[in-house]
Image (tube, rainbow, N blue to C red; front, side, top):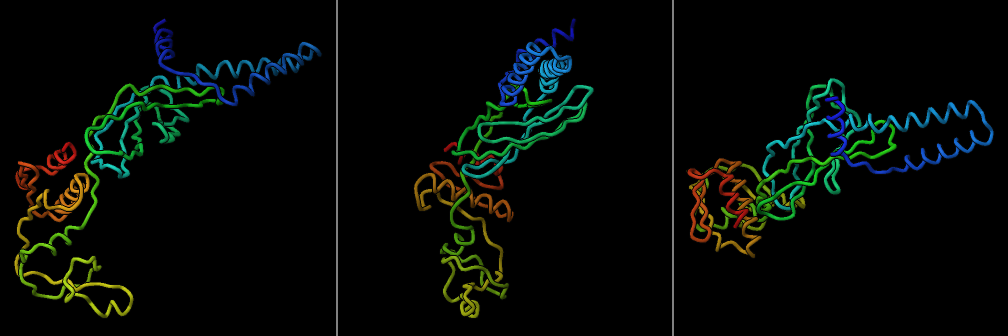
Length: 289
């Protein structure tokens, strides 16, 4: 009795949708019924009974296959506006048998999940591309199954949502360009240290003319006698509108983090210092600005 009540509760959470194969089965049953009624063939009766039994049993089997799965979002990495990312979901199968032919859907995105073993979990990464910065809630995700014979498309909503902060899109001039454009000298040039692509901000005297002759404009790079001091980024001095400024700061913050360079940002009446503030705290402020 307890198993039946559990099945009924699970059944109420699942939505059933007709498929093309549903129409095929209905047409096949109707044709077999007419054939059996007019000609009274035992083989037709057996076939009719077989098709009906198969179609009838597919529903409960499909419900059991999709209805008991447990889902939860896992903490994902950083998400940026207009940048491809992903959300991670853990799907846990508590049953003693495997689950088959599932798929995870959200709007136009979908991920196939061919198999989840008994009493085990699968981690699924759902592609996502946020369109704007700021607070973000991901919901309306659902699981779908056509198991076992596609006579019905079964869907069940994922009853949890994921909340995150979408950071500004990292976009703009490179950190090297900023350093070259600063009036302060970050040390005296000492030794030749290779070539890099010319981006318009380097000194003309550093152009490597041999590479220009080959059709690839590069500039000479020199090591410095002393380390680069802590960088200071002024929001008001960055070219462009608000979104462009935030994108530029986002790019510089990430480049400084990657190169382990200390920096400060002055935006409105606030000053952030990287040694004191976590990078995610600074990016979150930019996201909500």
